[in-house]
Structures are given as structure tokens and as C-alpha cells.
Amino acid sequence: MTRNINLSLSGTKKSNLFVLVNANDQMPVEILKIKSSIMKLIIIPFMSKNWKVLNENLVFFDNIKNKINTYIKHYRNCQFIDFQIYIELLDAFETAIFLHTEVINLEQQLYGSDNMSTLVFRTAMVRLKPELELYNLIFGKPDFKSGNQYNNNIVNDIVTLFTVDNTTFDQIKKAIIHKYLHP
Image (cartoon, rainbow, N blue to C red; front, top):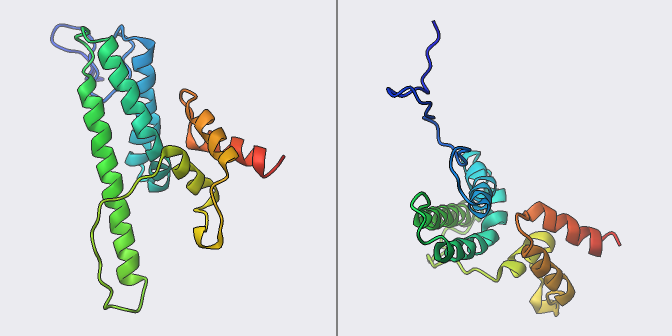
């Protein structure tokens, strides 16, 4: 005899699993897109411990938060949407990513050098504008000591691509590399 764990006492089907998008809800498309973005850009890489992808997607957090704040104003009277949980979820993941990065950096400082007299200061992580962080992830940080600067054309193209809905780091990277390294 099979056991159906999705039935409640009333006979209606209920899912006990965490579901990002429930087809029975009459949520606006914008909210479903935000949920999908959070799942694709944050939760799935976090669950698979793909820290590289999480660091790449960190630049999209502020954009998602801004959209959520816009939707808070627009859908203020909707009872089925709890927007504050999404902002707190993003803040929690952001903190987890920063802490993981700090641990990795400390391990490299402690175990990566022979000099054990190194003094380590714990400071808050400095974040650049998203377009500059993306530039650094794609091309590496410019060597300012030797006179190199950010290429303003590339930065402007990144800004343009960054504003496209549901864009990912890989899509931006492909477009920029295709345009500037393989013309």
C-alpha cells in the first residue's frame, strides 16, 4: 500500500517540501520572477556550496532588494506576500558569503605564508559598485600602480547589461568577452 503524504485531514493536497513557486497562488508575475531569481542566483548555489557562483552573484543582491522595495510600495495591501522575509533572506545570505570569504582569506594568510608573525585585522568587507565588481571578476582588478584604469566603455556596457531583468553573471561575462576580446 502506498502512502500519500501530501494529503491533509481535509483531503486537500498540501506539499510539505519547500516550494519557491506555488502554482495555486495568484501571485503577480513580478513576485514570481523575484522568487525565481532568489532561488537561481542564491539558494541553489548556496545549497550546493558553490561559493564562486555566490561571490559572482553577490552584485545582484542590491538590485533584487531595490525591486522588492518597489514591490512593497506597489503591493502594500496583498496579504499573501511577505516581502520583508525576502530582504532578510538576502541579508542573511550576504552575511554568510562575507563570512565565508573572510574565513578563506584568513586561512590563506595563516597557512599560505611562512611568516607566522603576521598581524591580522578584521575589518568590514569593502564593496565596489556592482559594475566594477563584475569588471574585476571578468578581467581582474586593474593594476593602478602601473597606470592601468577601468575601461569606461566596458563599465558602461556592464551597467547596461546589469539592468536587464533576470540576467546572470555568465550572460554578462559572455557578452562582454564576445564584444571586447573576440570582436
